[in-house]
Amino acid sequence: MSRLSEILERWEPVIGLEVHVQLSTRSKIFCGCSTAFGAPANSHTCPTCLGLPGALPVFNLRVAEMAAALGLALGCEVRERSVWARKNYFYADLPKGYQISQFAEPICEHGALRFFVDGDEGEEVRVAEASIVRIHMEEDAGKSVHDGGGGHSRVDLNRAGVPLLEVVSAPDLRSPEEAAGYLKALRSIVRYLGISDGNMQEGSLRCDANVSLRPRGERALGTRAEVKNLNSFRFVAKAITHEILRQAELLEEGGVVEQETRLYDSERDETRTMRSKEEAEDYRYFPDPDLPPLHLDAALLERARARLTELPVQRAERWVAEHGLSVEDARTLSNERGVAEYFEAAVQAFDGPGAVPAKWIVGEVLRELGERNASIEALGLAPDRLAELMALVEADTISSSAGKQVFAALLGNEKRPRELVAELGLEQVSDSGALEAVVAQVIRDFPDQAATYRGGKKGILAFLMGQVMKASGGKANPKLASEALRQKLEEE
Ligand code: ADP
Ligand code: MG
Ligand code: ZN
Image 1: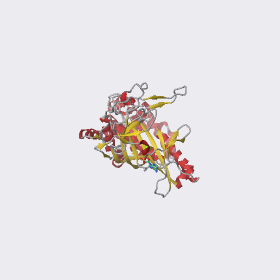
Image 2: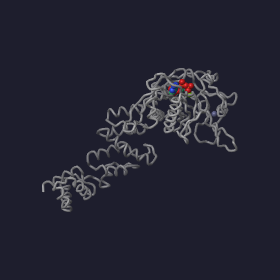
Image 3: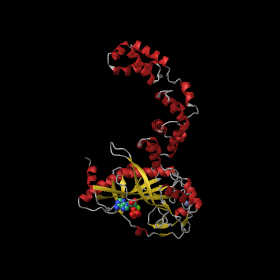
Image 4: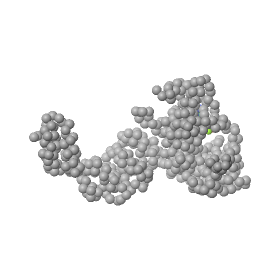
């Protein structure tokens, strides 16, 4: 038994995530500067996002539209009137000395997020749910660059004022796998809604994990430590695992967990104290006098609603029920909106069970996309052409291996699968006369093997079938050919 599973027999982990989602607006939240990633340092700045005295913020309403869209998608109450607050703290990358955020009356509260959780070895993927406490809007801070040389650090304020949503979960998660699953689902949803690219490497999705332990059976929550700025699914799971081990060791030695903020060091796979946990009072939150309360009008809410679509996990669950897909395949197909819609279009176009398009898309289409690192729109295979190909294979007009050849030949052009079958000469031979002739020839060519079969060693049939397929140039309908072969062997 691993040390972790031994610990988990006595201790229950309790995890809550605070996720920062960078919104994909073109301009910043309180000024007109560009949000584009990777520009020369400090080139996307103006008096407002530099925090110069006297410069006033002007709210970018697109941010509220995106916040409301996420709130509605997660079943939150969306406040018609919400309030901007100043969160005061000092840091080199925060020139104003405060961050404009929301505190007492955030734009969204009380929702829920459904997500997939990887099973332990041998166990199936399952679906779980966590409550969302709140979603609020805020501005990002700048970025300190510590590799400046000469012992100096530098500050890049391009990111200062980039719009963020902070999504706060209830302490409902119970394992590193659940935390990773929650974050993956949130990433998938913000991409579905078109409000963020969810790019974790570029910091568009950043996660702080709050972790505590309590003895199994205990209801009261233990003291938590918060691990900051986790920027990959793997690091989230690893940092939480590390925190569970660290806290269990402390508690079992009779120590206490300090409420503090820790940093995860991915190179050493450990967390380190950053600072003792600040309380809300430390920030001296107060309503921002430069910004009136935000009112959402009907037109804005309408635009937010227009972004909504059935969510990935809900879609996947429906497909499992409607088409009998495995949860694993349904998860794979629902992760990206483009793929999910492609699957649904293929199901529509294909006159048969949904499991067939699922198999083709998971097996062929997604493999191809992975190899090309391309989006499904760039593949050049409209779902109706895939559906026609699937129908040809299902009707045994072509074999499944010929189907894969046609699939490859379909990409990037407008030809119909039927055309390609004719062009490539892949039509299966199902004509009984033709099949019998091939079968008879194989039996003449391999008399010893035929005798072996007739002597009772039926396993040799696979060899003879192989010869039939070879003799037919791979085009014999395998089902009919093997029937013909068996019949011929038995009647002589
Ligand atoms: P703060 O804003 O000070 O960080 P909150 O109480 O709003 O604190 O909680 C922040 C996050 O910490 C939430 O995601 C919440 O679910 C989580 N959390 C709160 N208490 C615990 C606990 N005892 N163990 C684990 N997570 C917790
Ligand atoms: Mg916090
Ligand atoms: Zn600016």
